[in-house]
Length: 284
Image (cartoon, rainbow, N blue to C red):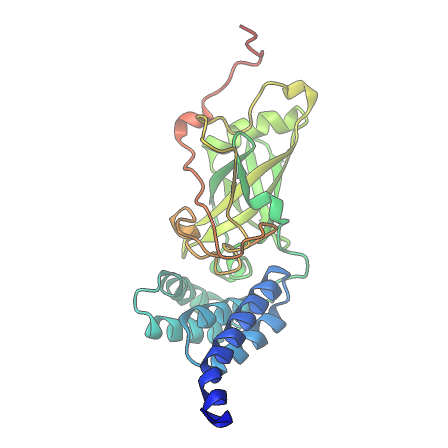
């Protein structure tokens, strides 16, 4: 075999290796909120050949920069490459509404707007999920994306959710009622956006401090699970947070979880999980 033949034979292998390296680099940039670099890296990857995942990542990076029109184009490219691509399909549907209300461009994501990775690790009793009600108009909601940090603020008998400096909704009553009592007694919570649809927003809420007065009171009561910690980040939120819309099922992309390509789905929190608990710890 001549040198030329050897070089040609190795070329596909080298290309595959380069594509893998670029994909990992693009995911790392996205995880760090470096959306310009993430977009550029995905463009370099696409120069090596069409790929639905790279198109989705590029669309996500553009969306975070406020480029809604360009984001839709790349989601459409992803769907053309893979007609069964749920990520592209779901985001195209959402963008149809947002583009009418917000136009081709909107405000880029603010620096530091992403929630810390630890929020997106499910832990029995300390994390729960909730949908938001009373959503703002689509123009404002266009500035919010999966992975964004959410601030929770009591307001009378409501628990208000804000992100990127705007009010994005009210935590559904079945979750808010319990948390409001615990917050009044000193508990503290962090939250982050896990998924958005055309007309819905879902968040994860984590207890970050339990006041001694709340000893024995679980923020999110639920039946015991086989494991207490269920990571589903670094491969979730970054990748349009892959299958977050389906309870993050079969997800692939978001944060301090080391395996970027593996994600576990959270368990659904049932209505029974929010039944009022007695104030006193049962020592029986």
